[in-house]
Image 1 (cartoon, one colour):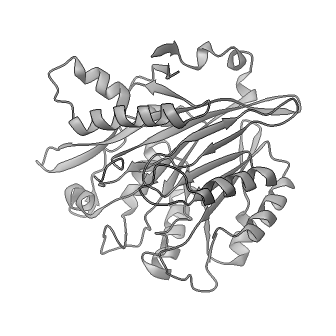
Image 2 (cartoon, one colour; image 1 turned 90 degrees about the vertical axis):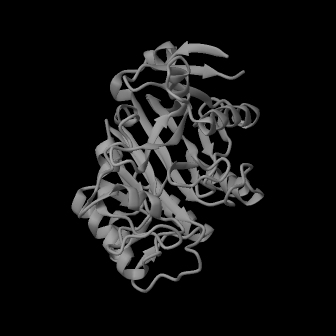
Length: 372
């Protein structure tokens, strides 16, 4: 394994000024199962302080941090799978950790029917958290979609669609962005009118627990790229799927496809579901040229431990650096973490295209691991 210093060793990155590059971090499925609710409740609030402490610095190092928020804020009674309803404390914990953009078009957005659907949008608005994928009515969608994010003089379009909502139908006038080529083609055409630097499509798609993308995913990714999308970022399978960086020829923008980020945080324990990846993409521009400076992933893991109340709690940890740090101490490393790191590394080594692993530490020292 080849170890290099992080982005500082990338000459193309060094040649860019701060205003000519933009770092976007993507995290997968943020979920709150019943055991998480039971073990973190403290009277009328939920103590989630440990959840993201070990990755907060890395998330905040990005200019934009995006997460798939796969639970409605449906109010009490709070519940886990199959009909999720999480407390606002969960959204606040993600916001505190540095996530400033939530994706809502997923198969659980109607778990608490229309009331939970509306309440989620209103709660996130009240917390000042930007989001997209679900809308109160046609006017709301028209005013806010395609979603344009402005950061460091970059213009980024965020699109978000889901394959379905577990058989539940949305009540008029509420709107959910379902995967529909005719609608998506129109949205992409409208997005281009904003003269964006990059168009990003966040897709809730694929087959649960399948590590290899389906034919439908691959065909749809190719179709989106042909329409003018620059980055396709996937969620839903709850396991990590491969990533492909497609370098453009002269005058052609680079393209990135991440088929599935896997789980960001959950209480799932089925094989390959207890972790995921965070993908960090540095976008660049020189004159009229727009390109991807780097696209890297970091392994993250939902580590279980006993909290001060003696209950099992969860914290998201940087899996590779956590493993390395604790191998040389008296700390007992979770055998499932070791299995996850080794298995996922091997899988991605054989299936990724030009997207390498990077390791970050709590103090934000970062290195790249080349698996070639």
